[in-house]
Amino acid sequence: MNNEVLLKVENLSKKFCKDLKTSLWYGVKDLASGLSGNRNERELRPQEFWAVKDISFELRRGECLGLIGHNGAGKSTLLKILNGLINPDAGKVTIKGRVGALIELGAGFNPILSGRENIYNNGAILGFTRKEIDQKVEEIIDFAEIREFIDMPVQNYSSGMKVRLGFAVAAQMEPDVLIVDEVLAVGDLGFVLKCFKTIDTILPKTAIVFVSHGMPMVSKICNKIILMDHGKAQFQGENVGKAIDLYYTRFANNESNVIFSDNSVLLQKIELLNVRGYISDIPQLEWQDDFVLLIELKIESLIEIPEFYIVISDKEQRPVALLKPNTESSDLKIENGFIKVEISHRKIQLSKGTYSINFTAITMKSKAPILRINNALSFQMIYEEEIWPPFLLNVKFENVN
Ligand SMILES: Nc1ncnc2c1ncn2[C@@H]1O[C@H](COP(=O)(O)OP(=O)(O)OP(=O)(O)O)[C@@H](O)[C@H]1O
Image (tube, rainbow, N blue to C red; front, side):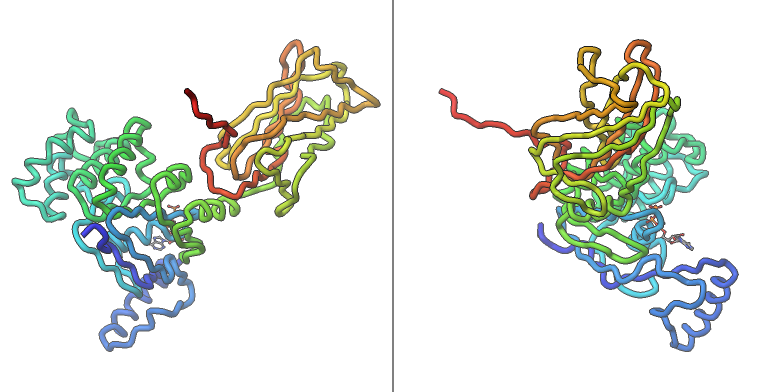
């Protein structure tokens, strides 16, 4: 019972047409050829493209599949096929049990009906009797925390309120299969955390398909993953970390970005020393290596040594570390029109992943900005195992008496 396959998808494909007129014309042609039993579903005609192409997977109770990929990769289209909102051109979807879905803002709601009436509507679609919905409605309203507005038409709800109601209905109706799209992100932090707590509690009884661009969340809740690229599965399997790495590689960029410069100095060189190797020009360090950064500034009009701020950010541009800046007593000098500084930190314990270095120089006394560069340098930490938090700290375990 616990291990049954609730969702089976076989070679699912869906094509769209880029041009509305052509699309309508193809529609008419398909209708005619459909009637005569001659459909070339697997071929593309001019202006057509595969939004979803040959996707197959199985999902059992207790499993959560993450769908990730660039904008337009086909994730939402796949979800809409699963939810029966659009028909595939080829392939098959088999679902056992009830499907709860939170796909598009306000999708599945009738805008002129109130929140309460929509709960009844949705419940009925999911196959609940009026009596059963009566028993759940209060719970749903409480979960959504919109009691005050529950009798107002849904068209007047804010985006967050629609998501609150949508998720409350989808999750509280005890679905066997739950489909959740990125829309969750519209809710405020309190609600998003509440949703993830709910997902944790219903997961053992449910098969979940979860679309997100938030990789920390995907790595936290998904145990299977499909990385989609132009409709196809570029990577598929249980190695969630590998898929996320691949996803990030797509967006890795080596371009530094000068945010501010008063032209008193020029960044001549920024380089990581002591590196293990390079992957597409990105230097690699291994966990516990010494982090040694060389910075060369060419002086145009500066007279004093500035204060250096180095911030290390992760792939999603969240700052994870600040290197303590130099002080007046740091003993740095201007020599032959250059400042050459080596900044080192022993045994860096950042976990696996790609990081970027943001560099800022300010005047020591008045704290006025001189130079600020984002992504001055990217580097990759290597480590054999998959670790998601930003740090892997070396610790000692000892018996105590
Ligand atoms: N009804 C439609 N008619 C024509 N093209 C469509 C239609 N719906 C989606 N598409 C196209 O299909 C492709 C896949 O879109 P989809 O919304 O599935 O991407 P996505 O991976 O969910 O993207 P995002 O991350 O931006 O949400 C896109 O190129 C989109 O323009």
